[in-house]
Image (tube, rainbow, N blue to C red; front, top):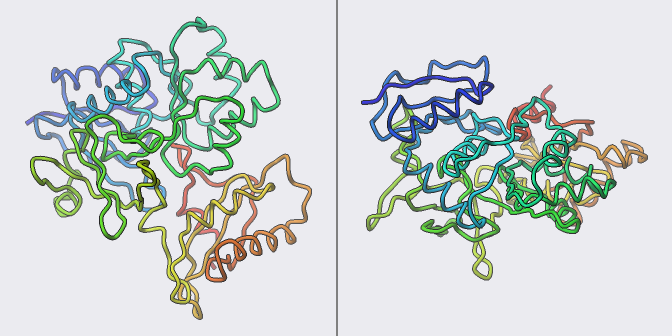
Length: 385
């Protein structure tokens, strides 16, 4: 058995040192936690092959606690670096108590480079540009972001050619953690930003599919019900303290370990397309409604920057859509009541009557988790009462 050490994610140098020791097998397993949070879930001892204990983001449900081995973390990091073209310097703009931020540290350790620290309560695009502007122009630079951060970068550089030139020094901007709207990707790529979409989870030690293509030694299987299974050496060891869920989600067949996700996907011309989450489909009047498609259609409307669709109990329909929309600050001339009705009409025309939101709440800013993901539980609570 191996002892554990708990370190708050705001102590990035301490996390990095403890992570380095844990990956080498020369120190205790590292539990990385958000500042001032409950740590009673962290066991005093874990199996010898556990290097890191970390929580999932819990954007729509209670977070899960995941045990990851050094083998899984390093397999993911090296496969990712191999796809990107080799070692480089990473910008750390994500909290390290989430897998996206932690993997920046793992990749930096493997590359023997020091990450550029940008972690703050609120992502600051100006600070990113300042940090990149002083780096050597020939240096290979990488960055991992969530969609809201990519959106802020795009909004900044669209009106600032000098800033755009600096951000384009990045060799790759990995974007993941949640669905990225097609319109945002189109805007980013039209500017020449080197965006790479990623798919993965804490349970896969981070993103394991880049631009629809699995990384080296990563296997993807689509079950008959559409759910995505991921196989390979990148998988987590277990869910801490939950042997039932571990048995439900992890399996082995023909010498390959598999993880069963909640995500629905399909292969189109050899590329994986993630269509949403299995638990983000509601039944309204007997008709299935994909909440992520509702969000995608809403975000295609000029005045709507980001959207979160939730399920609302309804006596007549069983379930109806509730929609929380963050307005684009540069497109706020429309009357709120008229805009809400326009959103309903567009969603109805695109997706049908069952997908039409019963209620639309327009907000200046969506409630978000420290990871940058929308807090879906808080969004749902906006419709209570």
